[in-house]
Amino acid sequence: RGTDTRRAREVLLSKSLRFRLRAAIFSWPMLASIIVGVFLLLWNQIYYWILYCISYEPIPLSAMCTTFLDSIFRANDLGGFGIFATILAVLPASTLFCEDYNSGYCKAILCRVERKRYLRETLLCSGISGGLAVFLPVLLSDIVWIINGEPNTGEQMGINYFTVFDGTVYGELQFVWNGFFLVLFLLLLAFLFGASWSVIGLCVYALIPNRYITLAAPFALFFGAHLILYRLDKPLLFSPANVLMPATDFIPFPAFPLLYQLGMLALASALCWKLL
Image (cartoon, rainbow, N blue to C red; front, side, top):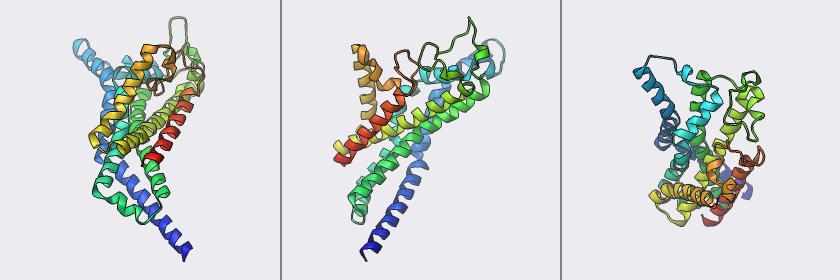
């Protein structure tokens, strides 16, 4: 009988996890994150392309691009995506959790399943939905620049041609698979970035159960940490602003942003586990 009860709880939790993942992923907040994210990544270069076509002559978008890695960097650097990505990450899962908490759904689930299982489900749902909220806009933007840009090949590199990754630890990696290896690496960083900050949003809600503070606090933490480390100069390596697009010359080794975000995700998950 005890075994049957545990199996029933596992089935209930599995169904609940699938339901909550669908609710978070196929939701208006997720759609808003994707639309805003794509806009932030594309608007700057599209704007100057349209302005050139109006002011001079119509040209294809590809004529405004060099290599697709350079276009991807400019999309992250000039459009404001890196600044507001924390809000995009927090929006889907935090909105869902706030609704569950305020409606009493959390209490109803906790009456049927163990607290540890429910917390595991909540963290998993938050991490996946937050990761996708940042990953999908980056993926869609990357597709645009890959179609219109040129691949990174050693033959293109000359005395008068430089890329944003020259002089960094990714200088050689940018030519692996004609640049596609670095694209995949940046997509992985985007997913981990979204997952980390989504879980941080849960931590904030556990401390201050207010939806608006939950949405705003991760942005304040992200921007505040970067400003403080920027002023201190030396610890700028640990600024969260450098892990989404690590095209800087002070990254010590290629896997550093990956390990940094995995550590931040683990730390945020452990803290959330204690607070919820």
